[in-house]
Image 1 (cartoon, rainbow, N blue to C red):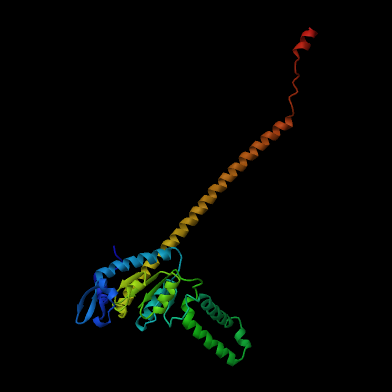
Image 2 (cartoon, rainbow, N blue to C red):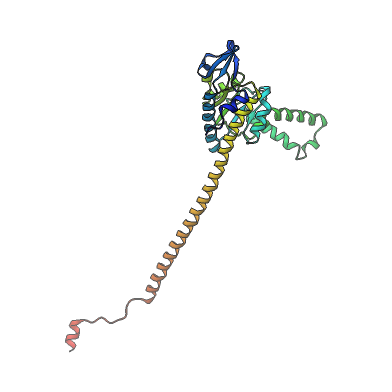
Length: 287
């Protein structure tokens, strides 16, 4: 069963595209019709593409890797921040920092600096500096928190990117493509779906459409995380059981070796047999 349906997407307004004059010809396979100069997206294809993307994201989450969500549009910011924060995945809702992926080491330095400034507020360092320096550090920390707070847990490059509006986030798309990072995206009729690996044809301007699709992806990722937890628990139980069995075998082997050693030692302590040997020739002469 699909994670979303034609009717749900229709209610969310995911079928509304852009004006005909703004369309991208590469979106032709996903356009159902034109009405009042506006392209209508084929929601049957949207259902299929959304299912493919959700299954792929689920497997990535199950493998324990991170998926970075990118949505700097005003109508998508709060939606992504709320839904993605709940599943503990990193996201960017402010301006995309140039080199976020291609110059990741520098971004990590900024994140570590943010952590250091935060630590200064708790270890008493602020009490030993001037008021001016304290104000300067507080402003810098607030700025870094706004820009990098949502990716503080991203210690390595993400395994995939999910993007809302690839036309607006074209720099993120190019950086991901340069590093061969898989890309997932909501693609409207004014964008080129060939620029991403998993395009989901849908309205990327309406908050209802964005919310519905992000919700579907978030649930799929949550399923993957739950399955990963179950896998880890079953693996731990299996390792524990295997360890117990190996311990039993080791103890049995130790007992067997100990028993054989004791038996050999007892036989040695008895010494050679003292029964006199009879020489037939000597016995005959004596007789």
